[in-house]
Length: 136
Length: 136
DNA sequence: CCGAATCCCGTGAGATACTG
DNA sequence: CAGTATCTCACGGGATTCGG
Image (cartoon, rainbow over all chains, first blue to last red; front, side, top):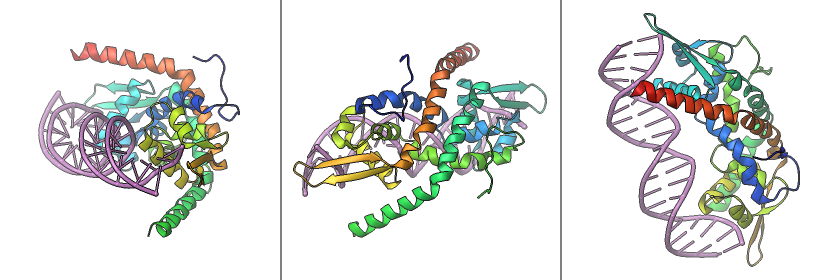
């Protein structure tokens, strides 16, 4: 839509432009949201990975959610699915190049989380502490 | 937990490590998830912004969700809240430095989205098309 | 102007059981 | 092995109303 990139870190934006700014971001967040998308994508990043490998490797995921998330990622073109009609059957999932380009931004996000997780945790505790005092 | 950073784009990861990889990322995603967090953060990035400004500026947000999201962001230390006990009351929200450091990763995410949104959309359509043929 | 309280609904997601 | 099919429930989030 816009022919130039608006820098989120830049100045001079009005509040009304915030939603315009955020819009494409939230598209991504929708792709990646869901409890398991990121884990699956990362697991499928380095080559073909089988269904059962994912099920065992990703702790806590249910069969159902694994299937559903795999289907969604495949639909969005982030994962390719290759079925070998052998017996027993064998299915391999691989992250596409589009998905792999997502890893750098995700990495930046993870770095931010690691840098600030302590700060955030203590901010949370402090907030709850103050709230408890004020509230009671 | 780990004393060195594991590069998501690197090789040699087993599937079992995927969840370890993804873990801090999903912390962030939880912060930022919720329909409105990103829009609010961006709107509050460049200086104090008032409650009603946000309500009018962010299209489609309800009073309730604005309040709830603001509280959560404040609790996590991503937003500061300053109340002026005037009449009528006046409240200003500002993104903290921690939050502002999040904008670069978000920007990278948005760029990814803009680069690939067409590809993803057509992948989706193609998938649905094939599914419709195979299914009926 | 800036919220809090309440009601309501759709959907994400777990548990479980069945199939080619 | 790699899925599907149901059932169920919690929770995010919208609409509306009330209060300081």
